[in-house]
Length: 195
Length: 100
Image (cartoon, rainbow over all chains, first blue to last red; front, side, top):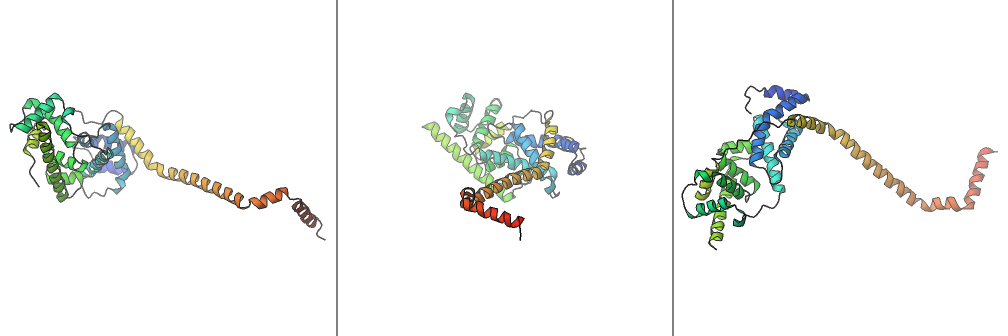
């Protein structure tokens, strides 16, 4: 949402009057916000364009329900988040995390992270990113979302609460659960490596 | 809230160095397609409802017709085969033509 001069209130007013040009402008204005959420939480085998289209269609279907209690961008991001979570839930089975499925770089990096306490080298940033997303894939969709926003996007609990619409206490519970699961996962990986 | 595992912290810190440089603008035609689709789907419910109820009504009518035929099957078959009924119906017609 780079365009700070965008007249959101006027645009929404025109959308309520079923002005198709206003609807187009609204989609173009909100696309960067929605696509960032979609890219961060895209389920396997789903195109980001299909998912973002679904989010925008939901937004237009529910637009009459928007009463202005929260900023419009928060309201839209909540629709985006819940749609992504629904899609992640629909995948049902999360792929098992196995050493054999890691690339040479990822396996080497994981081995290094498990056996020493040195910071990851900048050259390994890409492998770390891949590894992080594979580890996140082991978490429940809601927990994954919280830990991703907290540890990767470095959002505060308040910001996560605004984006997701969940209470701050619930965000904390989900973060706690996700971190505990990740810790357990690291222990299992270490045990598997030894055996 | 618990503190994150140090191994996770190191991996996450490295992963944060990767910046997503992909374009975030809507692809060409995306906004037009979504806007058209959105208004089309908002208009749809009444016609969809009507179509659904029409099909349902047709189904119910067909079932009622079949039911009434089944319930009156004996009477219908008797009418079509019985000669007594032919005579009685001709008597009725006679009475209607010549009421005296």
